[in-house]
Image (cartoon, rainbow, N blue to C red; front, top):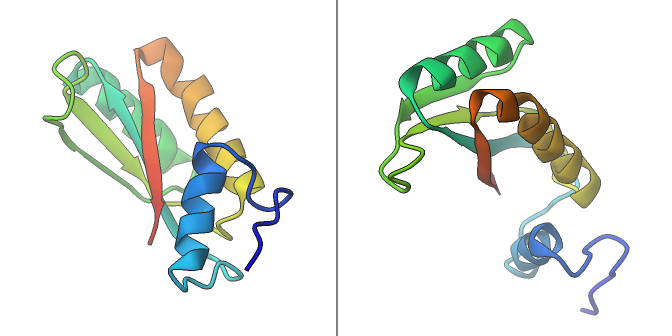
Length: 111
């Protein structure tokens, strides 16, 4: 199959989506997508998690050992069709709202 650059642009998100499709994943229906945001301390992570909860999002908050500077992680689980546009938009939204708390997006995965 030839890669459609409109659906799977040549960037990190497009590459990941293309790999999922090549592995036989059906990307045409909505499902939970896990997004990670990491924080410098527990208080910042909890504030962000509460903000997501207040906006109807399913979340998890825990310590994170993947980054010494940002040792707390919030996982968000919105339900969406895993398209480049949807993933990019949600990741940008998370980045925008976590920045004031010292947060940084740390990837996503389709569940």
